[in-house]
Image 1 (cartoon, rainbow, N blue to C red):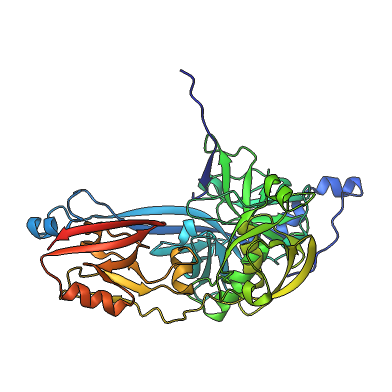
Image 2: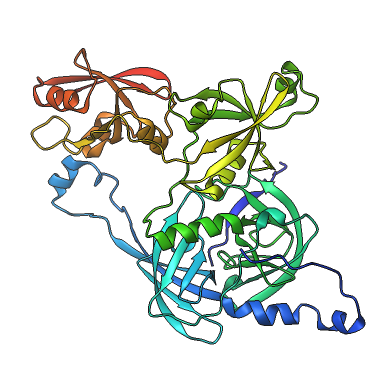
Length: 460
């Protein structure tokens, strides 16, 4: 039998002015190697030790409320402590540090150790699992060495780079390579979805959150994952671009507790050869808009279904994730210039970067013990709810935010649209509460789930 081993993306858990880059001009410069760059940059790269408390589930019946009462707590979930090892980069002298969310995002205790062995307790002030970025704040820190953030849009394939981190916990290590690819939007780590720089500089477990710097010592990316068959470095590593890190730092300084992305309010797909041919294009490029919300900022700017977005702020976009990256870099409150291709004509349009509107109000409620499904959380579908749950842009009605323990037993899922209860249409969250309060012994829920209609029937 032939066994095929497929590549796996592995988590690596254990704007300054751009100086001119050039090749060494003398034997003296060659003999120095990267030593001057490392000496300047390495003090700003730290080791991170995180303690994560998780709950085990030894008894498979314990998640059922009935068996919880029956067993009286026997077999309850047990807490377990996991230790996570990673790296981070100091972004400011007053103690802001960037790392990966998968290193520190769920940690209960975080210790940061600098190259000169100073230790600091740290707190995650802004984290985002989707981008796999976390911003930490060191307690009582000042006068720290930091790295300047380079404009990562100016990075080119072939540039020499250094990766600095703590692979396998052996201590701070430096490896060298080149930038081997740009716009790697298909590289995902865990739940992370994004846009990455690719490098062949060897990085390994423990390098997560470490620095990818250029030959001037400026930060161009945060190392986050590798593509590997064995778990070790195969020369295909991915780093989160510095421009996105800059926006995270800005929002952290503003006091945001979570990362706010601009809302596009569209559904799109990458251009392929068949679509390009049908549109009369010489080459496939851009993102084709397949659906658009009535209050989308792109609608307000003049876009419609069938238009192609080819560039955002002068940079080409060839997938929805690349487009979202460009919008995120601009940030809420800014204006992005998008290039629209329609009927063979190109036009640049300004698009406001806004949050998904909470209009009409979501009116979210949590049902109490006087209802048939205590703990059920529902809300009215609006752009904010649609964006949060990843629902179709056309979603309307009442949406399940959290099924609660009894709702989960009944078969409800996160994101279900409650169309009716016992034959009555559900238009508002108040309708749901009333219907599940004044119910008989049987309850029938009419739902829409991922475009499919279904009914759930259960007895109280």
